[in-house]
Length: 271
Image (cartoon, rainbow, N blue to C red):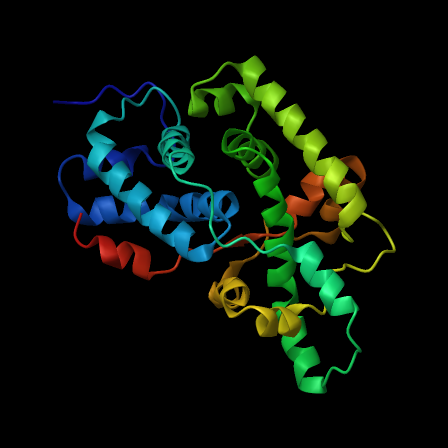
């Protein structure tokens, strides 16, 4: 039966071919959307392993439910809807690091860092910064966290965001406003990225963190293994302009995105 397409986008042709039962087309389709899903999962769940598991489960759902896609919205809207509903059904992340406590312990110790340790700290620094600012998202409830990420990181308006989550546009805006207020209040006091001229308190923590707790430190070493894509806002002038207009958006958008580990699709096997 031929599908009626009312909303066409860059995925439409691949979807139609995949619906004909061609495995390679389905694989191509999942490859195109996996980074959207993995980075959303990473920001919502915080833990890379949990994000990988969730991404695999969401991709499987997309594959199984593709015949039910009615081409009445952008394909990414449908994908984010499936992903968001799945992520909201999961339990709160388990492995959470209390970085403020770790910082206090670290700063109370004598500073005797070797050159090798300094190099390793630099390598982990970006991952620690990513982990820190995204761990702060866990201060929000799950629904508000998804709203904030969809809007601030992915640039979705209230109309598309509300369609994804199945709520009203007004409710979406209220959740976003509440989320921004709560995060801004915390980061404006605690985050070195927010306060100009203040050294980031997370820098220099890596070896101390790894020595303190192997399980917690494992998060950052796992994050370091992921391949970071060029940030969508790599232009320094663009970032600086955004920093002036919306410092909260700047903090989260400047973190860039990660490539989905290749083994996720491989584990799914033939579609």
